[in-house]
Amino acid sequence: MSLSMPYTYTCNIFITTIRGGYTMANNRLSNLIGKFVRVNRGGPESSDGVLVAVKHDYIVLFIKKDGFIFYNLEHIKSITLLNHHGRHDFHSLNHRTPRTFIEALRANKHRLIKVNRGGPDSVTGVLTEVHPHYIKLIADHETVIIFTHHIKSFTPPLRTVNSLKVRNKR
View 1: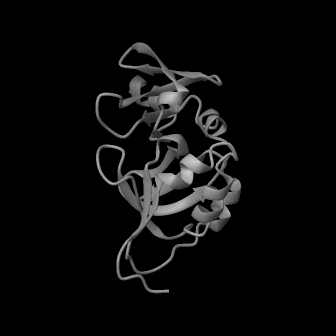
View 2: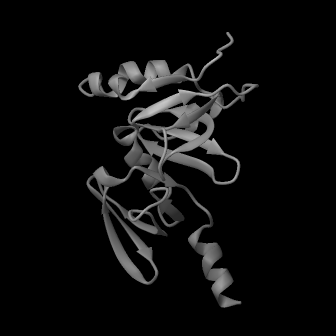
């Protein structure tokens, strides 16, 4: 199937499916796994990359320079299928990623992550605690509590805590 113009999945999908746990949106988005897409239309949370996984309440995008980005579906306004040649095989990864956004955060506990892509809400630190309604990060020698409802995205481990300790001892 050849598309001459980008095709956008708009926020209407998400608004109409909140009660159903994003089921309708997930089914439609699953068809885009392995394709080159743009998440959001602009701003610090906008990214172009390959859609890797579609889960219960989040998606995973792969970008060459940043690696994997986990996007909370509550904060995605649109997903655009871009006219980009090729398809990437990430279907096996879709089955290995955690089911929910909170579980994905838990899987990255004690690792250095970046919460939110840019702007004043962006913070990079070591994820120390994950609770259903908030997380704790150590960033610049401060403990930062972030309510999970306000996490738009996170980029998982740049390095593990153990590798940071080894570097600091040198």
